[in-house]
Image (cartoon, rainbow, N blue to C red):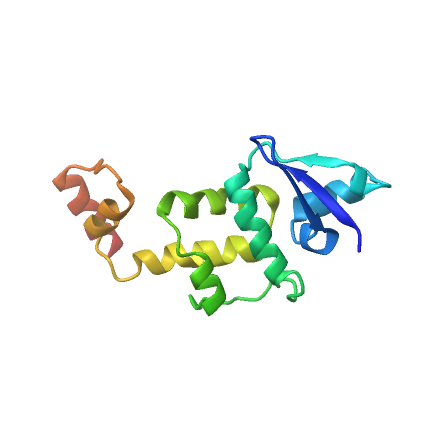
Length: 154
């Protein structure tokens, strides 16, 4: 089975099988468009992903490499997450948001979906004030502006 070498933003080299690497649309396109004949001897730099996040991503893609591709036309509006993914995503908020950004950069749709569902589950049923506290968001509106927005939303 062929392997792909990836280099994190902090210079660490990772090796993974090409099926796992191709869970990333970005890496898959790069391998195809650059026609890397001997991908095993090439190192693909990932300047936007540090080694801690890349380690987690490789764990996720290796677990999911045999999954069916995500159907873009499917309107899955559930917020359910598999037990494995839920345990995998029991991380601090900073790590969760870094995973979202890396999944977006690497075009890993399944990971992007499950991380965003995790955030959606975090805010479901919370008041705006609770959400602001949860994510350390500064309150930009005055009380009167907030009331106006609330009335427009109803």
